[in-house]
Amino acid sequence: GSVAAGWDVVFADEFDAAAGTSPDWDVWTPEIGDGTANGIPGWGNNELQAYTDRTENVAHDGEGNLVITARASDGDAPACYYGGPCEYTSARLITQDKVEFTYGRVEARMKLPFGQGLWPAFWLLGADIAEVPWPASGEIDIMENIGREPSTVHGTIHGPGYSGGNGIGRPYELEGGARFADGVHVFALEWEPGALRWYVDGVLFSTVTPDDVP
Image (cartoon, rainbow, N blue to C red; front, side, top):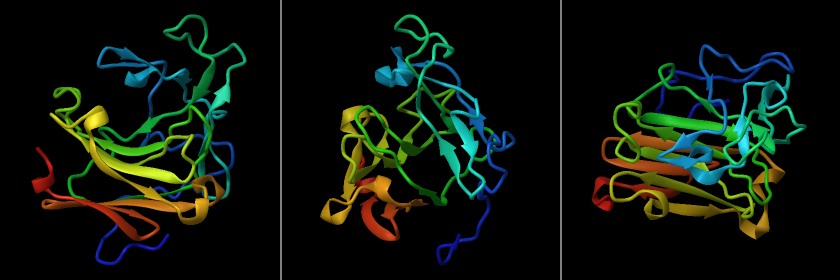
């Protein structure tokens, strides 16, 4: 895609591999299983799915997209914290230790799903999270969508004293009841020493500066 003015590309994945193939594992790492984070099962959110690296959950479509698919389990899912195989499978990919940066513009062109229980997200965590537990490691959510709110996304930061429900952020809503699932949108963050700026389709909808952080 086109590059935003004033920025140089240092990394890009255009997902242009053959249909049915896995993501580039030299760039992406699949997180696997039903996860416990901060003592809470289901990746800290009581999630009902197990994440896998299977192509039925994450694969190129041959048209320049990487498709992450949540599926009802057919019984062959990994075991879940709530007993038996997980009811659902999906995929969760990270770039930790492979693609990391401080400051810059990061963007993704995405078509979101919708529906109760879905929670697609495009987010950053401090690279030192293994040594500095969340939320002290820092978290920047470029885009989060609560599946029962198909017209709204959220841009949020989390850190010591402003995490979870106390994160600092703003929503962005499409006009006229349009749904993010109806088309492709570009979600971007510009991160500089004195400001974080969130965009949807080039529209600036939130700016956070150090003065906004406790």
